[in-house]
Amino acid sequence: MAIFSLLLRNASPEAESPQSIESLASLVLQEN
Image (cartoon, rainbow, N blue to C red; front, side, top):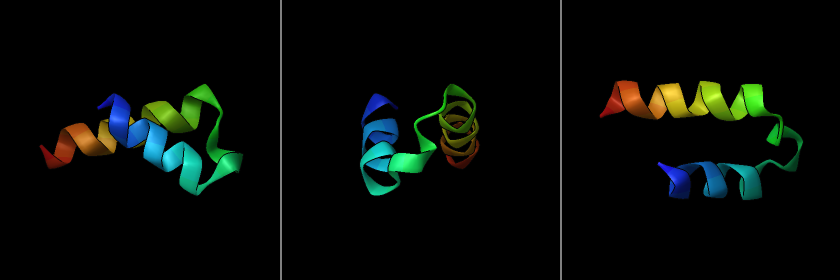
């Protein structure tokens, strides 16, 4: 899951806030 967050942070530098990372992580958990 850390890899996804790193890729997403690199893809969108504006999404470095903890809230966005948590929301993206929740989406990854839902997909898995």
